[in-house]
Length: 116
Length: 114
Image (cartoon, rainbow over the protein chains, first blue to last red):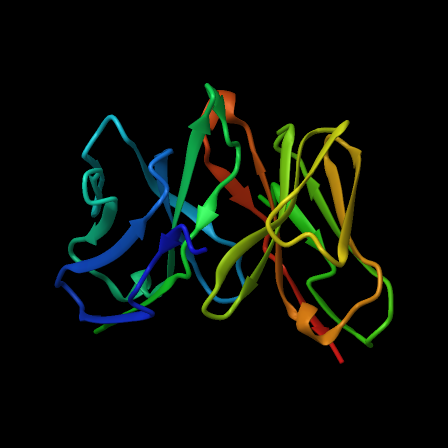
């Protein structure tokens, strides 16, 4: 039962253009969402997050959009740079009975390649 | 600065051997986690610990055990390694009081079971 899904295994974009990475979730109790970036031979590093009380969060070139009714979030990178080439994971966390799960559920990851 | 460290970084072992992967952190976080990454499956939670006296199974704990020796140390053991435990293993830490649900990951251990 994959509660967090990234249906695109890979994405290729040209430098300077927009990269859009998508993520869908099924658990309506999820209320906090994160994106991580992972380079080869390194651990995932935190990129940006969004709480369910918002529908958008920006940090420099990175913007995350949340559509709660569709249970969908996306990460926009504008403009894309070759150094952005990495695997991107979305993750979700939530609450049950007033207590945080304290755990993250990850998607399968999307490999982003930005061509010069 | 290596706030979360994992040893070894690479390990080759044989089926049936017992091995231990170690994780140390200098972030002062109470919560620690072990994940494995497999191609096409993302990161899956093996075990997690919210403090030294608290250990919980994740979604794929069978074949694994853990030990929380101190706030800063969380070890993962494979009691009798099998080939389908070949994967990338990551340790992570978190402090919800400061960073909500953000977790901070170590560099990973690449394990090959022959």
